[in-house]
Every structure is written in C-alpha cells, then in structure tokens.
Amino acid sequence: MKSHSKPKSCMVAAATLVWAISAQAQQTLPGADVESLLAYARDKNPEYAAMRFEAEAASERVGPAGALPDPVLRTELQNITNYGMDGGTSILPSRVGSTKYTLMQALPFWGKRDLKREAAEAEAAAAQGRATGSWTDQAARIKTTYAQYYAVTRLIVLAREVIDLIGRIEGITQTRYAGGLVPQQDAIRVQVERTAMLGELIQMENESHLARANLNALLARPAHAPLAHPERLRPLPSPARLEHEALELRAREKNPQIFAADARMRAAEKNRDLAYRNRYPDFTVGVSPMQTRNRVNEWELMLELNIPLQQGTRRSQEREADKMIDAARARKDATANQLLAELSAQLAAIDASRRMETLAQGSLLPQAELTFKAALAGYESGKVDFATLLDAQRQIRNARQDVIKARAEQQIRLAEVERLIGEDL
Image (cartoon, rainbow, N blue to C red; front, side, top):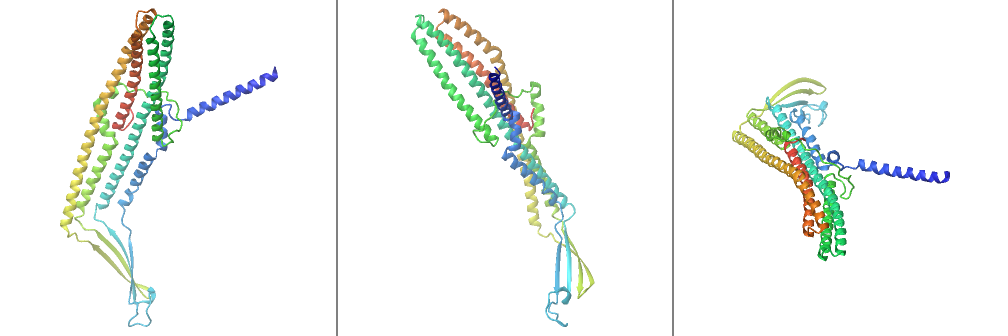
C-alpha cells in the first residue's frame, strides 16, 4: 500500500503545481478588468510614450528661451607686417604691431527674455495637454474595446446556454413526435433553430477574436497574445455624479484639448507682446584690452544697439501676432463647443441605456421567463403549438441580450464622458 500511495501523492502534487502555475499566469495576464489593461497600456503604449517624450522635450525649451545669447570673443591682429618696425610678417599677438581682444555680450531690451520664456512655458503646457489628450483618447478606446469584448464574451455564454435549452426542447419534441403527438415539422424546426444558433455562435466567436486582437493592438502586443478572461465591468457612477452642469464645468477645467487650446492662446498673447516690444532696440556691450607686444596698455569699452527703422515690417508682425491670438481664441471656443455638445449627447445615451437595462432586467426578462415556462408546459400537454414555444424562447434570449448590450453600452458611453472631462469618474 505504501508503494501505491507515493505515486498518487506525486500526481496530486504535480496537478496542484500545474493548477497554481496556470492560476498565476491567468492573474498576471491583463484583461480580467479594464484597470489592468489601462495600467499595462500606460507603461507600454508607444503612441502615448512618444507624446510624453515630446512634452518633456518642449519643457526643456523653457530655460534656453529666456537665457542670454552666448557672448562673443573677437581677436584683431593689427599691423601683422610690422610696417615701420623691426621684424617680418607674423600672426603671433606678441610679434605684431598690436592685438585687440573684444569680449561682447548681446542684451535684449528689458522684458523680451521674460516674454520669450513665458511663451515657451505656454508651448510646453500645450505639448503636455496634447500628451494628456493622447492618453485620454487611448484610454477611451481601451475602455470601449474592453466593454465590447466583455459583452461578446457574455453573449457567447448566453448562446451556448440557449443551444443547450434548444437541445432539451429538441428532446421533448422528438419524444412527442415518436408518440405521434406533434407533426414532423416541429422536429425539423427545432433543428433549424439549433443550427441558426450555432451560426450565431460562430459569428460571436469571430467578434470575440476581433475584439481581442484590437485590445492587443491598443496594448502594443501581438494580435494573438493571450488575454485574461474578462471578469467584470467597472461600476457605473450614480446619476447624481453624472449631473450635466457639474460635468460641463469639469470638462472646461480638465479637458486636455481645451487646456492645450488655452495654452496655445497664452503663447500667442506672449508672442504678440514680444512683437510690440520689438519696437525697442537691443544692445550689445563689450570690453576690449589692447596688447602691444607683451603688455596690455590700453582698454576700450563698447556699446552697440540696433536701430528699429523698419516700422512697416514691425507693424505687419504685430498685426500677424494679433490675428494669431484671434485664431487661437476661435479655435478654443470651437473645441469647447464641440466637446460640450458631445458631452450632452453621451450623458443622454447613458441615461437611455440605463433605463433600457432596468426595463429589460426588471420587466422583459421576468415576463419572458414566465411566458416560456407556460409555453413549455402547454407544449408538453398539447395545448400550445411549437411556434409559440420557439417565440417564447426567443423572447428570453432577446431580453438577456438586451441586458448585456445595455450594460456594455453604458460602459462605452461612460468611457466617452471620461475622455471629454479628462479624468475618471
């Protein structure tokens, strides 16, 4: 008995190990819920990474924009032929007539550096807004595709349950047909119904494959990479949290597109101020030691400024800057109007799908189940024809499908609302 118990214990241990490994693999795969997909995409998605790097690059332009230009060092060798002096031609500073060293620094007019820096800051903020907008768009696509994946998975389960139910009905029909209680047409119709459901099941399985491939594409994974079985949807916010005015205010404050448009308008305003500030001259200051042979015996100071005489050019630049502000403001208003209209439509769709789920779950499904039970009992007793039984079965299937589709629709609309307000609810 000891020799038999040891192999059994080894088999149990091996089976337990295999189960533990498969369970661990299932846990590490993304896809059980939408949060795991979002966490994976935030780290791995190349599109979002590219936008994030561009935003970081734009932020690095802020410091140089407000910095002084590099100083200039100029060396002038005078009388390199040593005319009137002893010695031949030379380019060594100690062997020419004299050498002049000039160190110059350009100084923009007061306020120009600050305006350039502030314009660069606004551009960096716009780039950050675009990066955030890229992520909110990506997250919305992941949420939408996951909801579709979850729904089609549940529809596949429902289709298999319906096929099993039709199989039981087929058994009843065959029994009654063998007893001469129903015509052959009933047995044929139930087989046709089962075949049609098998066809729908094949179509749903193909839709599930497409949804899984789309999710993997959004995660930058191979199309056939495995995903965890979708287990749950996110809980929907309460109706009070979906109040239109509050969400409209949040969209104006947090939407990345509106934020980026506002940042671009601020940048245009700073560039306009800089264009007006260009009416004033820039300066260059310098100091020049003079070397004669091996001694520095003279010093010079230098002040240079540009003369802004081309007023026509500057007025055109100022008008251009004014028009750019108008364009940025109009673009921001257009973006806000479009997003707020979309927000209103999405909230209305959430409310409609919520009411549809309540109707299907609370009324249609219980009524369909009672109708089917009554039809099944009536068919077994010969009081109801087969067409009535099939119709009752279809009503149950349609009611359950309506519940699944309504829940998925709410998740899709919620994803769009969160994209529009720029944050999760």
